[in-house]
Image 1 (cartoon, rainbow, N blue to C red):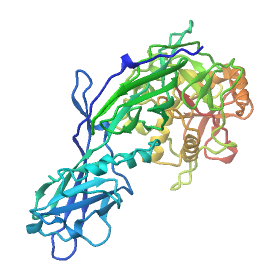
Image 2: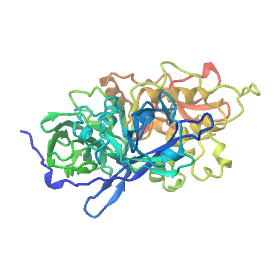
Image 3: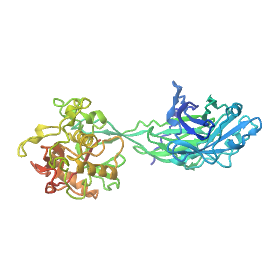
Image 4: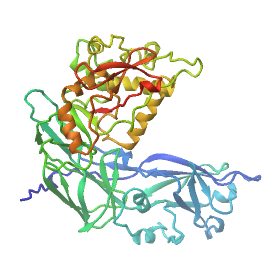
Length: 529
């Protein structure tokens, strides 16, 4: 039986008007003795009138991009000016370019003109110069499509300006158009799917991930809204002055539904926020499947999801300032500072970073020797010297390297590597950097977790302790099982010539030459969530 949660009583409404947001300049004519005819086009935002607020909401503005086209009219006492009759301007390389013959600016004539602009451009636009709103008929006939995803959304976002364009300096021909949205806007904010971890051996914060709408209907028709990642919301343009109904479903802890009806005037927006108090009770375990959308699936599931990107290899808050509070502080815990919500565990990737063993770095091209570290630059950097921890572990390979730099420092170490390669020097870690970024591009991760990083020797030791459980799940997800005889690079340096690696066996730590092919190893990446 399906349980539906109708959220009409939980809706938060926002009404929209306009505000200046961003400005683009366009040069129409820069030649001859005539002054250049300059136009700035300003897009309007919306005002959120949710109870208790009445603020400008710039998140709902339309940003002009490459290839966008606007039309411009000039009107004087005789009607539409011949050479300013639906003139076409295209956004190219960040500026507007006129199509056809440039417009010659004549200050004396332009002083008595009215100017109008609209977006998007239409060769068959209806412009009735004798009416108070020359675009009124065109707006009434505007047809909105059911697919408003991505670029389709801006194609339907009809905007016009009034005839009272502001002329900042008539002698320089600077005319400012203030565009107004002529449609109305609905905004739908989905709830979060919340994992309530019921582990008894460790205390874990709730884990939240975005919920995707399973269906979206407008007036009974299936439609595709525009998803705005920055606000985690869905947007859909509707005809003003006409009653509409939105409804749909989403998968939270179970299938849920929503529905609402409203009527909006042009340029107004209404925000619907779905409040879902339900939580998904879950016991997090090593071997669980971590998916590309951030969802977690039990290792005991009968059907392994197809979008698995890694396996949970540690349960608990991995932040060094938490696991080793006497050694690290929040100040020098970059994992905590960059991703404070990543307090639930670690995930190891399904595949190796490269298809075969690789050489970590190369020799200094100036000296022909391996003579520099990638992890020591921060010690003399005023911005970073108190915010990072050294990755240099000079312990003997037969000793206790885990005690030298305790804690899960792979994220810290990978930041050291990345910053060094991009800002200081490349050769100590060039191959590692390139291969890391190739894998990051190939296997993307959810926005609320860290990106893939190279684990520390301590993190690899943690994997070795649970190798059988991890490999069982890797095999079930059709990944490449970890081996005890190949050796996996850590992100810890031993010296200018050596890197630490781990064989994923008891006391499996060892060191290898970083710049020689004979020292090549595999690498298996991690992320914190």
